Image 1: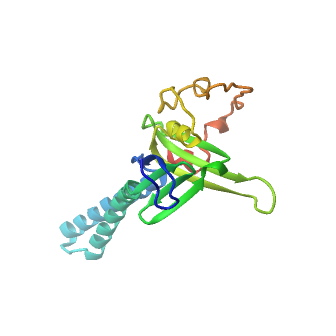
Image 2: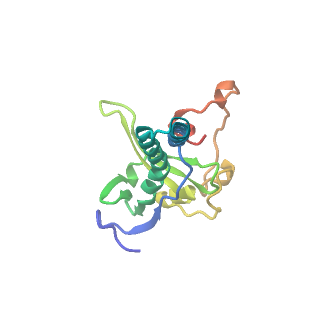
Image 3: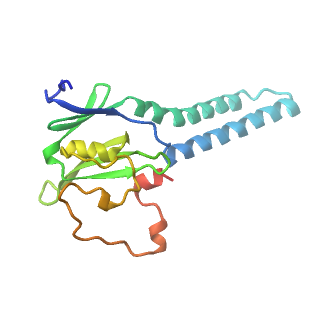
Amino acid sequence: MGRDSLFGGTIVWTGEARYARLPVAYRAVAALAFVATACALSFVLAAKLALHVAALPTLLFAAFSLAVGIAAIELPRWWLSQMRYTVTESHVIWQRGRFRRTIEIRSISFARIFWDPRQPGVGDLELVRAVPTGALHRRLTLRLSGVTAPDRVWAIVRGVETTVPAGLGDRPLTQRLDPAERVLWTARPRRSWRAQLPRGQRQIGLM
């Protein structure tokens, strides 16, 4: 493949975001906007039939609510459609238009994969660079959203050859190990009703 124009490294993989399900916040905004539109149009119709007047301000409000609802659905799709991802020999690059974010591969502490339960084989790959102690205690993250087979992309980032079919979120841990890797310890969280509640923005967004 070619070379990246930013760092000059050899490109080993390129991809783009695949549209995923709307987060719950956007769905809630769209639903409220459409309900407001329906109520406003009903009021306009009632005013026209009963009072024989044109409720122009209410009609404008209905148009505004409809525009908000459509924007809440289409804007996330448009935003994701412009994202491009590139993996070079030394960097992972997130790009949208002229704006770029990068992370150096050798500085990645760990990665997390969030599978989309409604789109098999699609998920988010979050690369994390952690500074756990000291005055610079912080965490830099780079999220590749809507990636097809994020486990395969993570293997490419690490430079690991794998023969296991990628893109299966329900594959057990023992089938995801690298060559010569073995499990030293495993556990499950205690069962409780709190475990059924969504935690964090990601889990709420997948509702």
